[in-house]
Length: 482
Image (tube, rainbow, N blue to C red):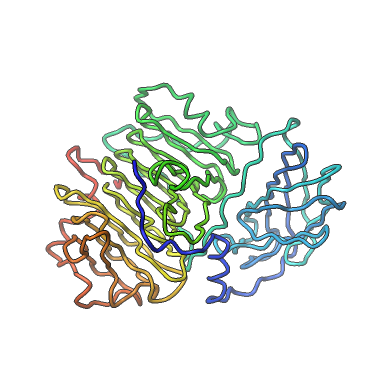
């Protein structure tokens, strides 16, 4: 399929987004820790390694942290990192929190990591400090795989959110389709990059599922970064991808394809979910291609969703332009999740309910969040329900624009921050007038939720027919909400 060409692809990477937010918001001062326990695990190969670090706080609660350690010899260095900002001076390394994992309660843990290079040998750090205080708990270093393994490339630096990350939520019950199996509490994971699972890649686990399966298959994924393209084919329904970490940032599926180099927008995705009744829970899907300033073929999709009756729960979708594609065939229930991007980063002709989600516009100059292409025969397109809309700057972000002339989008009972361009939150696209599209708001709150002639409001009587259940019911009465 041909790629969509649109103007407005600004130059900003995930790390730049962190810096931008830091310029407008001051984080609470970090508290000193009385101790910590650190697990430092590496996979090595000639000339390089990947390190996974788990930090457990043994002291008082922390809101903002810095982990310090030193390589025992010269020749080792951090190349790229994830879930933290890394800096190095000589042999000394400092890892500093990003916004979403700044708080560590007493006894709680966070997971970070990096790719490194080395010459000669790859010794492990002997000690760590947390906020300048030497860790008094255990320091464990290990290399679980005796043979070289491919380097998992870093996940993007998570874009900051002005609201707390949503709490983990169990995958909602699907009816009338089979319910997913309960979350495993122990045993061998299905997928583990370090070799401790049945498979090393997510795609290998999917490939092992028999075609035409009629029951739920839960693929559990050990914390780590999985740089691959993942496809759940149409002939493999009822597959659940379930991260086993303490937060969705612990399991990251990432790649960096983009429209210009990979056959157009739709082919650029990191994950293609096509099998009906698919479910994703407690993980991140990211496209870490960074916009280079060009206005042509810069779309880079994280998740391309074709699956009908799909459920995403406690998931992060990270990208720049065109993060989340919801195709015509899809009905999707997205619960307690986080979605970020720059331009049209929730788009397509499908039907989706985003319930209790955090949606973040990370481009400093703002842009439209949605680009719906709802068919005229469809009553329902996108419903943003009881969610939180934030952004990097004030009065710059638009609620959406119509990719198709009959686009349908409703922001309902949501918190719209000051990032929303209050005087004109909808805009035209490709000859389609926003005024002719089916764009509405209903009982929103927050600094960005003003009412004027450019902001059509749904009446109470209309709103009764635009509930999450009605969006998703279709002809089969699907109700994933319970």
